[in-house]
Length: 302
Image 1 (spheres, rainbow, N blue to C red):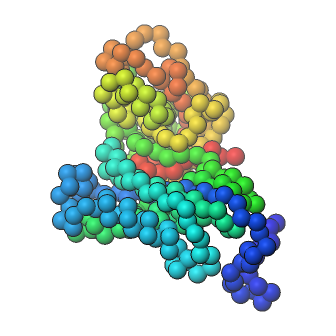
Image 2 (image 1 turned 60 degrees about the horizontal axis):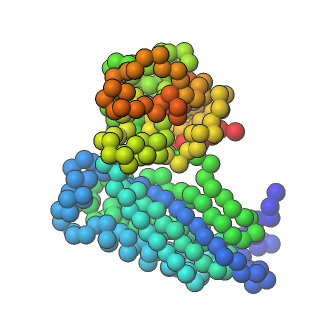
Image 3 (image 1 turned 180 degrees about the vertical axis):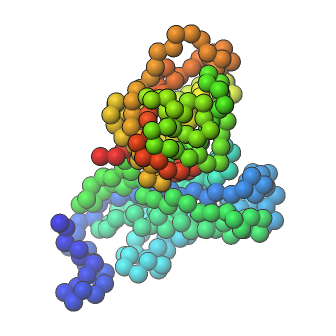
């Protein structure tokens, strides 16, 4: 067990002495998301938020917060940040704005808190800009995505997130994104035509697969290939039968197949001209139930 250096001999919180450490190049990246109602999201995209440039204000707020983290978090050291980047990505499918902050420095201690603080304050600033239109707006899923440098080495979050949750009344047709889904153990996603299948209760497809086809000029979105969960950041290509995935709510999925054999061209293939599910789709059964919403995190369960 590592020594907990933030406590002195009397058990009081203290700032860690890093004077004897050698400086190293460090980078940290953090994310958060801001979820809003469709009306508020439309106002944001159309530039009609009463307070003005909501995204621009949030971006500057994130930069300022990252640089002043040591003034906000009691035990953080002042760091001379060499680079701060704040990206805000509106996502129409889920009415959310993804916030990502990357910081770099050459120093004696890590920059994770600077990235996290930048992401948190950027998200809060965006909330402040739109709250008059929708006080039900929420800030969600603040997390460290990756870090490098220093004695502890590299870290990357071992999973991804749900971009969309989709269902359909019949098999072989495009599924429609939903605000939330309920996963039932041994059954699947409530309200979906594939629920009840013993081996293919819930299907997953990487958003990256859809983006590759979008780049060819095809108009596609979540659910286009009849997948239940559109995910990103998860290395679906490395999944094998028996692997387990845990969702943010505690629901657990077990991989039962990767890809499938298509005996005939379904309606999706005829509409789109291609179907990636036979090559890249992941099929699972529900071991433990729970809710699932766009923006939720998921990770491999060890």
